[in-house]
Length: 205
Image (cartoon, rainbow, N blue to C red):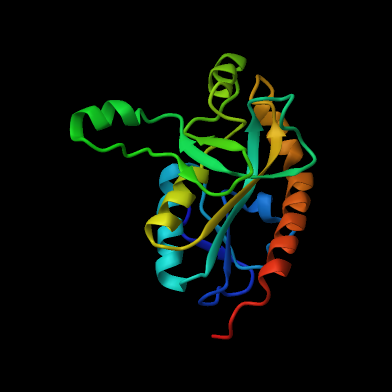
C-alpha cells in the first residue's frame, strides 16, 4: 500500500507555499525546487494528505496544480494553464443530502474570478456521454481538486487551483493523459514560477 503522505523537494516552511499534486509525474519539472506533496489519486487521499500536511507544516498557501480532462473542448484546450474560479463535486448529490440533514456537504467553492469551473469526482471520465453531461456544469474535470480546496479552506489556509488539459475525457483519455504528463508538468512549472515570483520568498523558519 502506498504512503498516504509523500513529500518531495525542499522541506516546507511555516508560512511558505505548499504545492499539491496527485501523482509525481505531474511535478517532474519542478519537484526539486518547491515543497511538493503527492497525495495519490482520488478525493479521500487528496483530502487526508492535504489535511496532514497543513496541520504539520502550516503553509501560508496551498497551490494545487495538475492535469484535467476538457469537458468543453472548444473553450478550454491544451497548451495553457487554467486557474480555477469555482470547483465542486460531480459525484455527490448535495441537494438530496441537504433535504435529509439540512446541510449541503457539497457547496461550490469559489476560489478566483477566472470564470473556469472544475468538477471533481472519484471516477476517471473517459466517455463522451459522461463528458457531455458534465460539460453542462463545468469546463474541466479532475479527481482531487475539490478535496484539496475543501481541506485547505476548512483549515483556514488560502488555496489556488491550476489545471492544464491532458485529454478530452473521451474514449482515448487514459492514453492521452499518460502521453501529456511531461509537457503538462512544464506548463505547470511556468505557472508556479509566476505565482511564487509574485508572492516573494517564504519567511525564514
